[in-house]
Length: 117
Image (cartoon, rainbow, N blue to C red):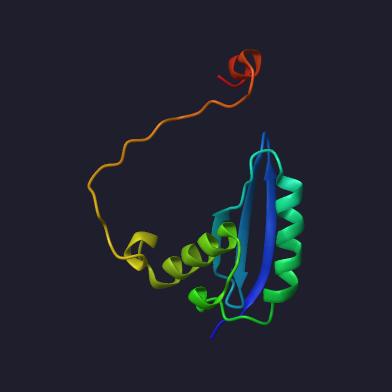
């Protein structure tokens, strides 16, 4: 059993919030916990969860921790790194060879997009 040692939040422009969880063995996992342009609200919720999880909960008990997606994904990432496997292996294995994706430059207005390009 390895307890959650810390939960840190990292706010990035324009509207993203990332969560870093560190366990008592100094292993880390990362998750994204954004809610379109409401990073402060999500960060407040994560502050509350931090009080309930840090030092009290085993980082491997993911299925028993009802938490926000950012914490959930960070815990899966932490466990995957601990076991030396990709996260998808813990979630049932690979289901496809390729995934279509797109890149978003950023910004809500043409001038902002141009500036980010």
